Length: 207
Image (tube, rainbow, N blue to C red; front, side, top):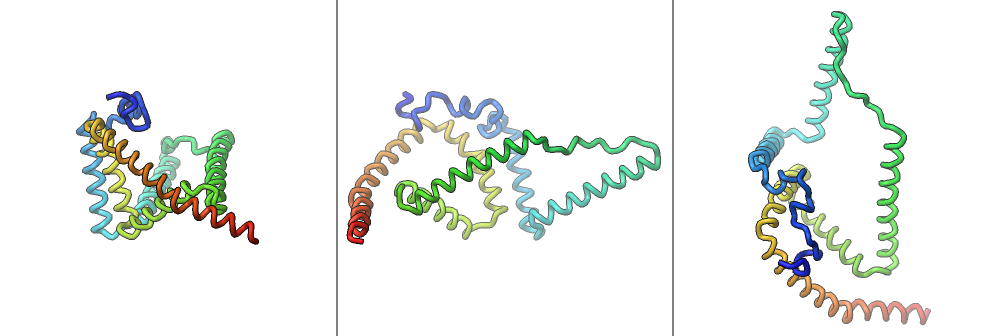
């Protein structure tokens, strides 16, 4: 299948794009992938049946951990034994600056896009954002965060493998559907969006 008939005109396979470190996602290490799914499923069932929340579980685990480390350190000092081995817990100034720059750049991009949407400069971006927000609202109303996290993991561990196996069929049908959507968007833009823009311009001229 030529690159022109692939999604995004890519020339590399899914495995080459993801790299060797993502073999778990592509079921190249099937036992490990299955183990992750089963462990995650067991954790999800425990959360659902026990009434534990993620916050309460993390708090209890951290409480147990610091309690063990505290008693270990005190007993080691009394018995002249080495203290518990702990890594150096320290954030360098360089790391903080890099994180700050990364966050600032993305926040500025979001603010710039929000301004364009609010001023009506980018109709396509508006419809994209509105669609994503609507989808998020619908998903949030149907499930809780824990179930959403487990479902997302299942999707991550199954969809890439299925796509790699049937990518020729998926690419051809997706490209065909995308072209149909483009045609519909052009018709919608010419009939409604352009009329709306002209109406706004006429109102501005009159005012």
